[in-house]
Length: 162
Image 1 (tube, one colour):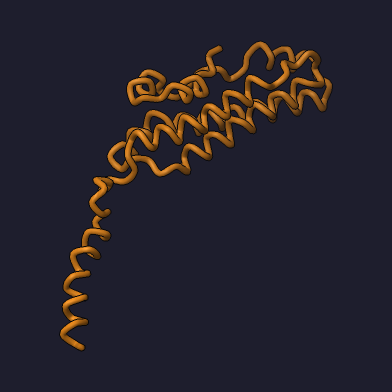
Image 2 (tube, rainbow, N blue to C red):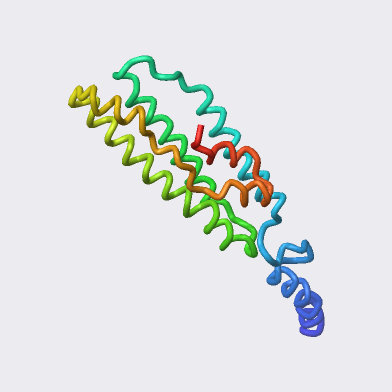
């Protein structure tokens, strides 16, 4: 009986070792880039659709809720992108060219939304006009790098220049 148990253990050891090393799937370095891009693009496609469905504000009172919705969409999509498991070998580049800049861009958008809300509450038309004419639309993410990496929908989502 002990002989059989030892034999089963010896047969199982290579399987356990393969499983510990990521199996035979070739994913020792983490998720595959194609799988990662598929997940990321799905997040950005949803964000782009939500943004396109927003009604353009037609009055000063509808401007703050509009900006809040834009920031909510950006926040949710950025959080979801950062939460994805990125290919291990690409993580540092993604952080540098995409995630850190998007988080910086999101912080500026939140500050802008606060200013819009405050101006709306104060009924400060001059400040609202100033804010409307100077939104934080400088894209922080490296769009050229993102395109080269394979992003499409995420480039559209990150491009705040228009």
